[in-house]
Length: 167
Image 1 (spheres, rainbow, N blue to C red):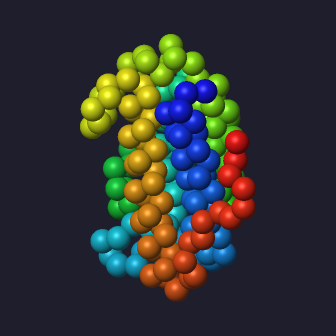
Image 2 (cartoon, one colour):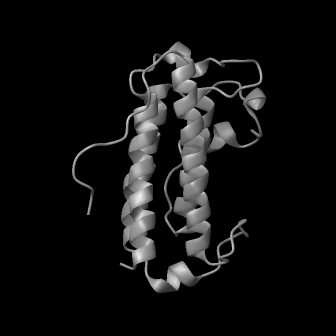
């Protein structure tokens, strides 16, 4: 595995855990609620990230069943949603897409990483590896939003994993 790919896989694994840590202990009503009328809920950001992970999985050639594809078909903002998945459903979907996605990314070869992605991303690297970097940064941005909402809702700060790094 190249150094760049190794770093991307490490970030994917870290983001996987941080997402779960943001939802740890949050009660359903808080996860569905909005801190202000023009702020997204934890659940809406979470479903957006599950959707984005499914998009990345598809970019990498995985064909996974997306549990919320129909729900999100015409959604552009939280105001377009009639019903969001429960926090348990979101955690389950996140874990369901994350394991095969991590495995696929860790095994990706140069041919896939050097290929052109399905769309251009706002990064200097036009390859799939550049697209992956952007999508991982996108995840980190929204996980930061989730961490802030968690604090605003009165929960303890999101925690970073401790212990030995994953190989």
